[in-house]
Amino acid sequence: MTTPIGYYPGCSLHGTGRELDQSIRALAEVAGVDLREIKDWNCCGATAAHSLNHDLAVALPYRTLALAEDQGLAEVLAPCAACFSRLKGTAVRLARDPKLAQKMTEITERPYRGTVRILSIIEFINRLLDAGLEAKLTHPLGGLKVAPYYGCLLARGEDIVDDDPEQPSGMERALVAAGCEVVPWNFAVECCGGGLSMSKTEAVLDLSDAILSDAEDAQADAIVTGCPMCHSNLDMRQRTINAAGRGPHDLPVVYLSEILGLAAGIEPERLGLDRHFVDAMRVAERMTERSA
Image (cartoon, rainbow, N blue to C red; front, side, top):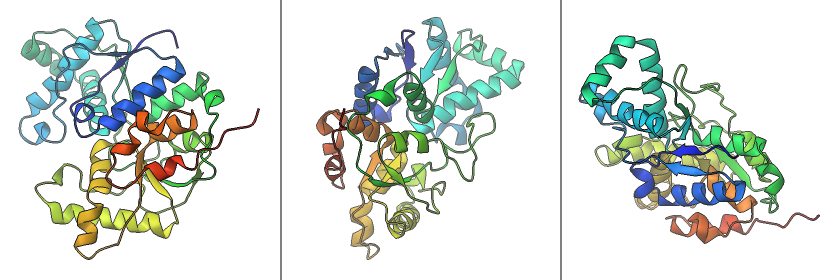
């Protein structure tokens, strides 16, 4: 791809989701994609802003979209599922309501013509496959059994996500191309508790335990996600879930970009697999070199 793609890492990818950032950047380099981080981007408001102030919840992503447009970026990748939902959802609302768009221009003192297209991590990776990445997946993962986990925000939203909200399939092509076996399971779109991880921890433990249990019942070797919050709840919370007498669980939770990165022959540490709470380096053991 010769045309640069804007990059919106959001707060998580500079903090708790650093391995998602690492793997996205490494995969883009292999694919020859020019990712350009939006200059002076701000927090999208995530799950908090829209419960407190409607204008703020729209103004925060609006400002980032206006910056991207001003910097000549026609497309923007938002790998975090929450960031994607906030940016894409704002773009949809602005297109539907010219008065809201005018109000945001006044609040932020920045014009926005609505020219930026927002890509999810799933859309981005499938685009890379179309552009030639599939031929570079020279280290397939040897039939690794995976449960693709979309959670709430990568499968839902009218005019935001173009997939079946109950039975999404956007990840499957990439996972199969990486040599994985996709297992059928029941919790692909169930909520993990999201941003309630700190305020309602017991509820998150219950929800995450159910998701992990169903993936294990389906005999998955790993859960694959594209959401930093889902990853945190399912990966980091496994020890707490086990200590509470549930489980026991010992299931790697990996990002879609890490799976594709491994299949492209990128070193596991460069992808951030060594940063996980539950040992994810064992996933890399399934890499095999494809014969010519």
